[in-house]
Length: 429
Image (tube, rainbow, N blue to C red; front, top):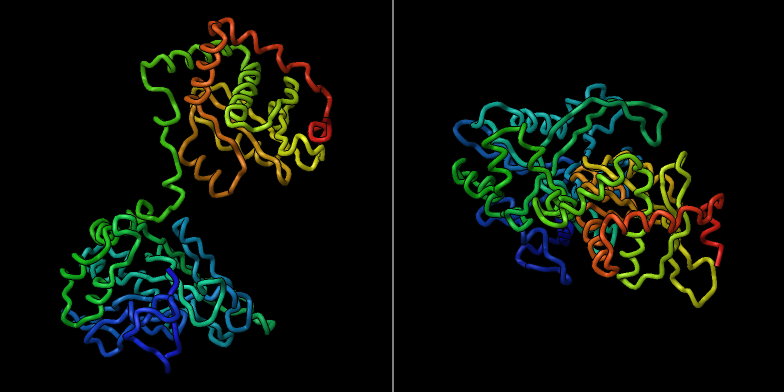
């Protein structure tokens, strides 16, 4: 969420919006608090300390990052912001080459104290521990002054001393680098409850009240400690990942039997499964009205990371080769889950604008799927369930048995295009 962040000298706290954009100071205002809204004035900032049980509590810490200033004299380092992947790498606030001890700078000292509390084995100390609120200076339409965007709520997982070089001076200096895990707030509507933040800022707010108002993920962190943080990380890709039971036929079903018999057929000639894979990809494109054809299969040895080559033609009537797109296919007749190394090998062979098609009789693990999504590999991923479904449809439409159907594919592509390069398929009409 992006907020308008007006100058401190012109801060209309009572206005919900400024020019149609939510007002930061209105949203973060805590009635009865003398500070009236969170007013971060440094990269690492916290509101005034609150006295609880004869101990000073830090309500929260706001880490502000300015991506457009990274590498300048003002900010001679660049933070790494990957909130959708659940992490941020944030550099501390020592900018002075004359300061030999980065731990003495106010912001760094605060972060180290926060980390001590968050990593404590004592639940009572974790209850006192403040959250890290990561904010950037992005505007609603890109980088802009006077805007703030909340990137997420986090826990410091690691801190290390590093040596950095000043942008304007040939000097190295010491600083701290913090790794922050961004927690998933899906159980709270992907929102940070301001009632919780305000309770942490008020003298009258007790620790029990703070805990009850906290997001679900934060309460679990307080209860279980730092070791649970990896399970709490935000991961937008997680919702796009398909479980194995959605990729394989149901146990005992006719489709499972069909898939098992297909795998068994190629037990002694795994390479020949590429004919089935090529046909499966043809059917997927044909059924969706895509103009696609298979060019050829690769030789049995030295396939170089792919087993068959195809082509999509976006403008068959136009006649320009530039409207044609190469598809490299990989076929895996296997019983275990697909190895991510094989997908990466296929992806490495793709040139700009090309696509890959990976056909397996097994399933893609969650880790493999996340890797493909995170690295944005342009891959068509075809698991065992879809393979079996297409084979079943082929048997129904041709009236063949499996034992007749599989041999019938073996001569379909085998000699087609042997010796041609990938580019030849694009250029040939």
